[in-house]
Image 1 (cartoon, rainbow, N blue to C red):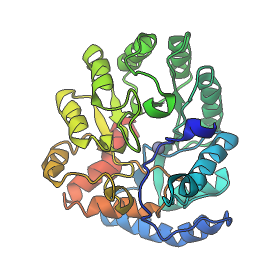
Image 2 (spheres, rainbow, N blue to C red):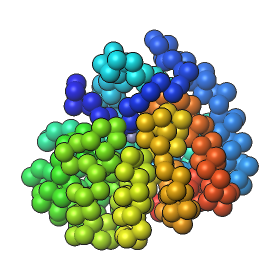
Image 3 (cartoon, rainbow, N blue to C red):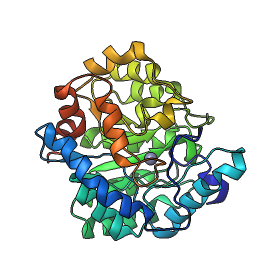
Length: 323
Ligand SMILES: [Zn+2]
């Protein structure tokens, strides 16, 4: 994928982590095993049966490897930004780690960067969901001829969530080729986790306006704005306030890493308190430069209370996906 993953689902920024993945593929797992107790203590303390994480990445190994290569190369490319992957391990071990954490349901966020790729990814995702019952069967799409047909097929095959990446795909989400696909996803009530904020760097079609045009045409579409819309947090909160089916995921937001370059505006905290029934835990596992538990701790640190945390970390996702 080369430079095509140069905006792979995350955020560029300063070195906010002491972790170094280095060449040791098992380092994350050793750390993770110790960490599992801490993660479990978090949700047990809230009286939850576990976590629901709507934003985790599983994809064909060679695609994931390219994403990791990109993050590895970030330092030299950007003159110092480090993005060490904390959970670099084989697929089965990564799945096992989420289970150790007590993540009841997660996703396999995958996304194409060019035409002709989405169907192949969707086929892989069917197989992955088949062998991973706690994964919510995930599918993706791209503006190209035939998209409505393969989105319909994915829905028929049981897809429960879609992923779209406006920045990596470099497309306008309001492209008319996508219109029938958005329509049928709105009709089916299937959530679409969409990275459309301008973090880590703006794309031609990122930001609230293009996706706002999609919502104007499909007001019932269940979009889930990834990363809380980072860095245009308040604009995306505004869309969530206008459109009752819109949700946001917490992925990487509020972490020490992201706060260095895309700080969440404290004045907007009351708005995310009010949207507490439409905010969903997301983490970007395994492609994160800090331990998983950090995402949970920073949510706790917002001071919005246990009820809000229970909703965000479990109940909202459980309700959305009928778990
Ligand atoms: Zn992601």
